[in-house]
Length: 250
Image 1: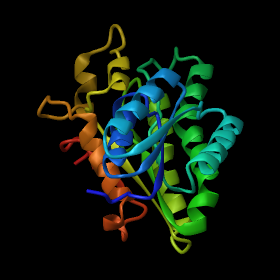
Image 2: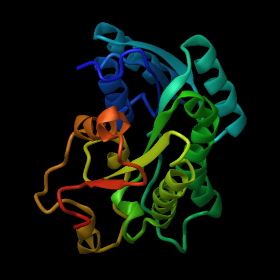
Image 3: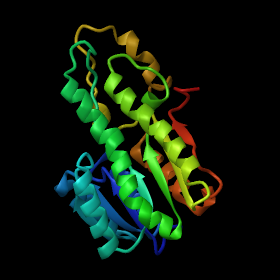
């Protein structure tokens, strides 16, 4: 398939997990992919993989929590690759923690990467998207749709992403830019492995977070959904936060 031939696609968090799978998916469909990540080596590796397939790619070191750096990087992308037509906000961090013990600085950092970073990258891409039409696809989470224990910071950040997605979809509905989000749960990624259970807690408290089948999905399955939402085939979809969780949020 070549749904994105001739289009420039920005993907954050492209060094691993869902971000890397998403970058590769767009590359396989003919896009020129800007692989953004704070992990320069990982972004470079993702770009190399895309070059081996049907697409073109270039890595960019970018800390999405730094708004000035984001503006600089997106300006470089537009200058070097062309006008971004798709913006995929995948970069994210998180961990379980007792709310009475989690440092405020840690809480703020999770919000700055997951929520403020998503806004900063979208804001930097929007002038280009508005210029000729385009799409933003954010990665929220099941944690952005219902409460989870020991996960206040991540829930707050992803809940913000979900509502920000809907707000921006309404704002830009008449201006040629669609904004959607995916809400995964139980995906086999390095980020998921960082969520170690809090010592001394009952494992039954975490039960609702995970698919009843006990199986985790692969990042490529989420990437396929992201690519669909960004494509012309989803041209009448905007403001959606689509779960991909085997019934966790059903």
